[in-house]
Length: 398
Image (tube, rainbow, N blue to C red; front, side, top):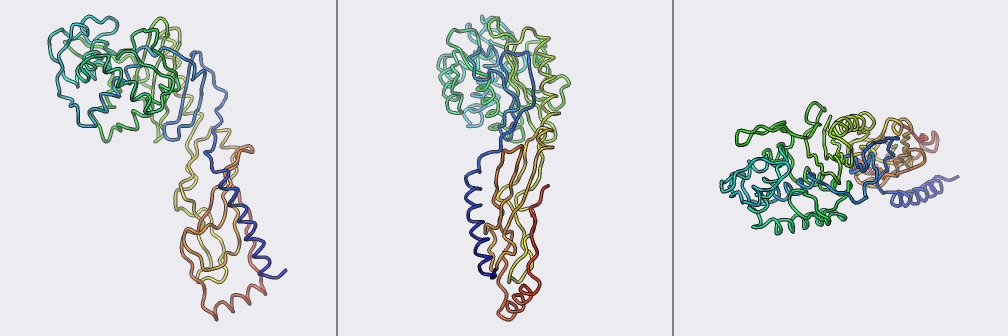
């Protein structure tokens, strides 16, 4: 077969392959291991990718109890980030807040308290009184504050949530889902990173807080010894059972966990620790190629360089279980040799990612320009090609 015909057929093959790459460009699915939990509702996700690692009735309606206070804190954090609220601003403690039952910070009616103290009281002590004072101080009334809670819930994608108060106090119309609480928590951590707002999210990791000479421990069992745990909030009512929203980060990988409907504080403590540790053992982020890192090299036809790097548009980092990692196959295909001239960014090949038949195809591009040779050099290269042929490029697996 003549050289031109061979190249034409190969180029046509790659034109079809690029179409396939576009069609299969959706996110790679993650297949969770066989994991169970005694929780009635559960939803565990990877923070960076949003991949679901484990889920159980995550869209079923449930009562959040004090886990609703995360949205109360979210609204306050947003006001602080927008410059509309300061940590040292002070609010007066109302009689309504002072009389509220349940978990308390033990605020005294008529006195003033800072936003900082209220946030610690809500996050560490789960104080219902502190939540009401913060809500009234920000919006005038708790009802007006709840409107802002629901505004943000809808804005960030909590489609099945309706807040009725700032505390999570039982109400027939108060409802959410484990999946929605995961969305809320992920958004809070993403919007208010600790390096940018060191006085905000790190409060969740505090093990105790003393107000009015009364020291109370954080009710979140994860902050007592679970590696990397830095939040967030527990909840309990008779109707909801024992619940927890937790987060931990290890080696740059963060897991968000929502559990609800457990039967006791002891079960909540044991299950949250067990499941969090299991997630980090079972799932790892594997960094195969960074953006711009050569995946391989292709031979160049009639260019002033003999090779050209094949690179990806974005980093290839995959969250995989150990089984998925064993089953993973990466294969590379490209036109060889690639005719010059080549412009950096030209589509030259395809990287196929395969996990048990579920595939994703990624375009490989030229990593640099390769100008065409001069006339005499092209003649010399063509003669060598006719005599010796071009090296065959294999499909590789890594």
